Length: 180
Length: 157
Image (cartoon, rainbow over all chains, first blue to last red; front, side, top):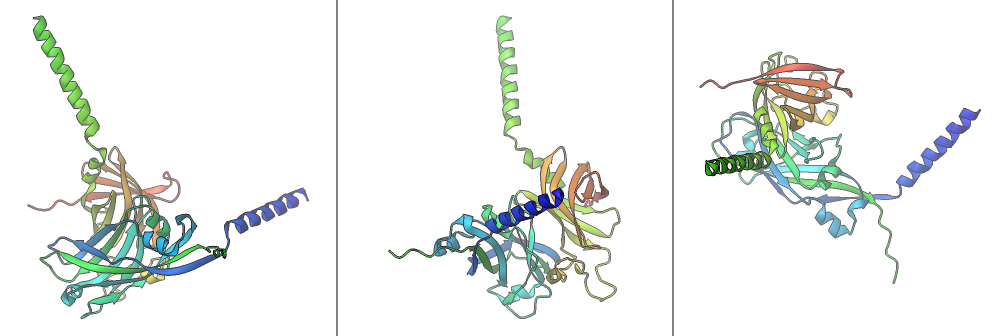
């Protein structure tokens, strides 16, 4: 009987703790600035890596929406597109896998396209269902974006592709401003 | 005689000071780059290129002994990935080793190794002795793991 009472108190306490951590949330999608993933050639047929490093990924979103950084709950990659100015460059690529990481958080696969359809200069990638630590990566300062590409044939020049990402940001619901 | 002793003492002090300063200035992190290169696991099924991005080391498959899946007749993909949407990722180019940080004494830790044959991700620590990597994958406790030996591939001149 005594044990049941202790269990009961623990369950109530735990429920209260969980309840107090929650609170109303809301989500918005936002477009990140276009990133240019690049690498110096020459490239050999097969697996190659394009990359870019960027900072302050969430600043624009936070400023525009007047949301404090501490109110952010989750960030997910909602959409990812790659494009090139020259169609022939994208035809060189048979598959592309976009990954993110920071100095303190591990690399995450966020988007994939295999195969890349022929004759296009802009393609949408399939976004990963399992995404962990994206918020922490974005908050960690420098974000490294890595594009692993399979190249169909040797290419004797530098290569770059544009990457446009849309993020879904979940944050603590902001209280309505009081009427003055 | 006294003058010579004085000069010698000064020279010793100067060299000592320079050596000490140089020791302090050389960043330890540069030793970590010795892992960069192409490596072959003990089963010889693949070759993995280890490279550095930012401050961390990653390894991706650059060659497969059997690149084609006999079931599909197409290039092998990561069909055991826990994320269904990522199962079409080509194994050629796949990053098996991720997020390694050079700690000290020829050891790279805090990383993970992925087994595409089971779709399992393990914590991993790498230790290097000359041109051999001891790659220890484990779940939870380092003692309860398995070590594989990878050899560095040297390009023919």
